[in-house]
Image (cartoon, rainbow, N blue to C red; front, side, top):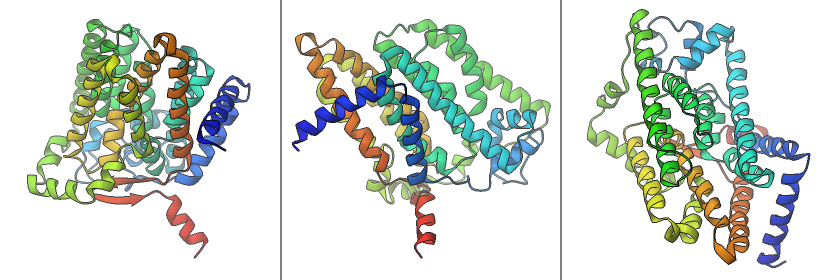
Length: 370
């Protein structure tokens, strides 16, 4: 079979599955494959689950670097719901991740149609963000994802304000991710203007104020993230980030890294400002990971929305390509389909503290075939 024939068949079958009433079953099957190939593990020391047992005191008993107490939303929710035991907390985190995927599928299907919704959701489920969310089940990352998703689709300022408060109380990566998405949508002329960014900024400030109030009321003393960065000198950070650099750099996108050159080659000349801004945001986000241990995780939290903003704007441009619009759109979607299919089965790993770590699947296979 020629490559062109394979692409044509993959394209037609994907469109057919997207329109099928079994669409969610297909997505569920793909997610099960991703979970099997990735595996599910626990975040080291389970700080958020243990914090959920009592989020109202200083928890240096978990670790003396308790900067994660700046993120009280998920532990407080688990505490209020009575889901603070290890098993219940993991189930809660997994349900939040699953809910985020379903929300993304629904919103993308509503905006772009069922075929596009299927392709885009598979890309999200096979992203490096999913890798770290499943590998370290028990972090607030799933809730960060769910709170960020509406920023890619909605135009509601009250919703942005409310989500900005919650997102800031959940994880600081949300603040940059949400604002970058809004700025990119503004640049893409996607119904977003300065008012949306301003209201979101006010929500972020409000959320930060509520977190500080929460910590002050309960007399919780924390080691801030800024203090944590200063625990290492510049040389240590440089050495950590330089080790395993080529492969750690690839972990930021894995096979999804091919999406960027596809979009740039096909559409950069159509909107230089938008794509230049997106590349700038990605570079800035990578710069922030220089002072973190969780290189892949933090970059994914900051940048997954930027990547999908690029995908969505490229998809819009493919619809407005004049006489060649239908062919351009088909070629663009074919590229995304190939990348998404390859990503389902691609090896998964992540960079932490300058070292490359495999997902729980590999230790499991070693035990099975020992």
